[in-house]
Image 1 (cartoon, rainbow over the protein chains, first blue to last red):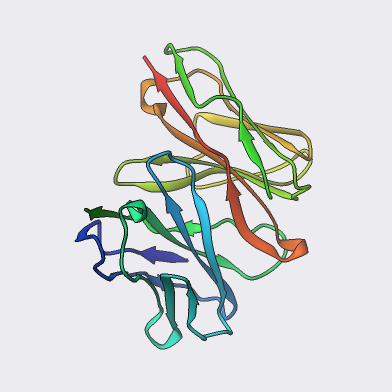
Image 2 (cartoon, each protein chain N blue to C red):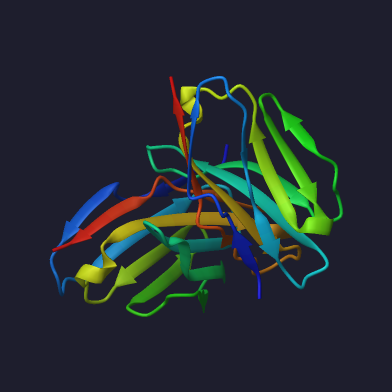
Length: 116
Length: 114
């Protein structure tokens, strides 16, 4: 069975601090996808990134970066120089990498509060 | 841009009422999903559909049914609403056949059953 664990329920940081959101996953599949979503106070889940299990390169997009390590089954998300607009609930998710029925398995989310 | 819309942002219904939540996507996606989101429990999959008139149960289908008569529309039905169905309901779609594994979500419907 697939499982995603986000051990940090809530994190609070002061603006301009760096913050890392942890994600650990379990799967028996050899090929899979990992995702991060942002849910701001408005409620809509916004897709941030998708990573393939066969590509362990880290990715950077502006102030956001992702560290994927298969050896530790982790897919951590770092926000550099955090801003108040980063305040949201962040979800990590996992799915099989095959066409057809591919439900996502979500972690329970980490609520990030960035204080000005 | 992928657009997923849901018929209502907020809905208040009485216990025992039949409730319809509608979801429409405009990107010709094969798959559509219904989740509910509750504090401390995260997102839980209710039902999903991988084709017109096809459906599969998710993790918590009890008390719900779905309908997909057209590719772009996926409806969630609460046959007889109960207070424990008060929740945020999120619809999503994707298209793995076209390499779109990520799901795109609608804005959500916050349902209150009194």
